[in-house]
Length: 186
Image (tube, rainbow, N blue to C red; front, side, top):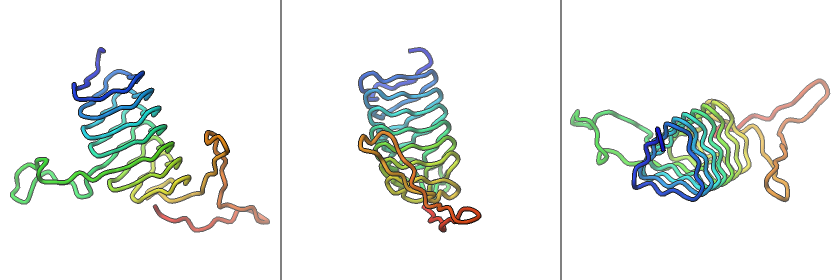
């Protein structure tokens, strides 16, 4: 495959589709997943089956994406709360100088383009992260969040099949306009 850098230790499922300019090492990718151009997936990361990872996305060590997850363009995952270039002795850090902090994106979640997902965060089942959001705390299942920091905008309710979602907002019509509840930061 031309313009792909996939190391021998990558575990690929069946029917995985790649665009050009991919960098994968030490990770696992599930069946029927599609990886866009200019994506890097680092070691000890796991992407489930039937996922779509859009172009220019960075999935660092310690990130787990369960099945049916959508990741928009230019999404960045972080795995260190306090990143530093050097250790206390002033030497460049090595792997022994820090601990990977995990991130978990649960089944069916969607992350909008340009979002940043900090470490030690879980994004719940079927949650939606709006484009450009910075997720600093856990996102509950079936929540729509957006902003910097991301805040809960409303909840979503799935139909019987679990494929189509209905929005059940926290906004209510009142004479003359909308009344909004205070939004909780996540």
